[in-house]
Image (cartoon, rainbow, N blue to C red; front, side, top):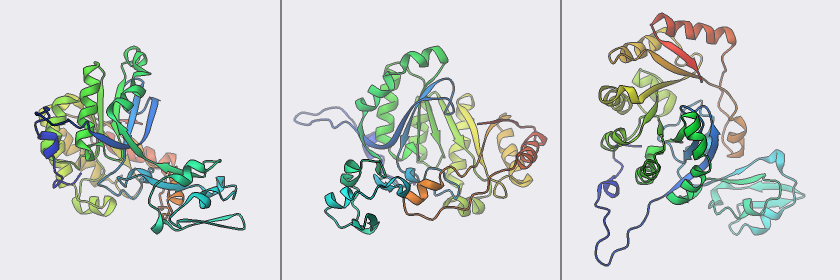
Length: 321
């Protein structure tokens, strides 16, 4: 979230004044995944927020980046029935000889075509939710949370881009004694982040690249704000912070970057990092969004071993997630 984002609604007095009606915050999500085992301890429900301030070259969830709902079209599922073209009022979908054409410049994201599609070739990624609607899903697995040491993880995209909605959900979870984890890239307003630090139980904090110029080439933004928030978190509550490193061959797996990561973490006594090797699983989503598929190289087993040895040489324990 850019530092300039307005947080006035979050910090405003939310009490109901005479003649006023308090409006509960709403937010846009693109998925709620139950029984997740990779987004924090135990079994978890992971709530995926839409919108991200970064544009990572290797992003495997491109549908998470834009804040508004988006139409996705998986051509391999299309039967050519033409129902989508019949309901589109904006000329964004056409059909000729059972071949569907799309003009995304005309698409408003209304979702009418997706609602009529019998094969799910057309689908709308993202919709608006109320807090209680999310909590109804979360409560379905509450018994598993207690037995496994799990809870709820707020991810994205970048969940801090919707601060009011996020904080309302955190409060709702804590009202029901649920463990709350925040999965973040750290590109968020420092004042809001400090408020969140006092609330949540755990943070999965990404470090993508230590050199700011290289970080900008890889993600679209420098890392000054990210490192500022990371240092704040490690100084205030290191026990709440779990470092995650999305690792890409040739982009951030070099000795210099890993040494810089180790030097920063060493200042705060952190000796463990989670490593997330990049993959190309999201290529079909790029095509569904009519976006170029990124050229993502995956690690060979030998290449990943070399990278992990570099972490070990710097005194860092690693766990592949």
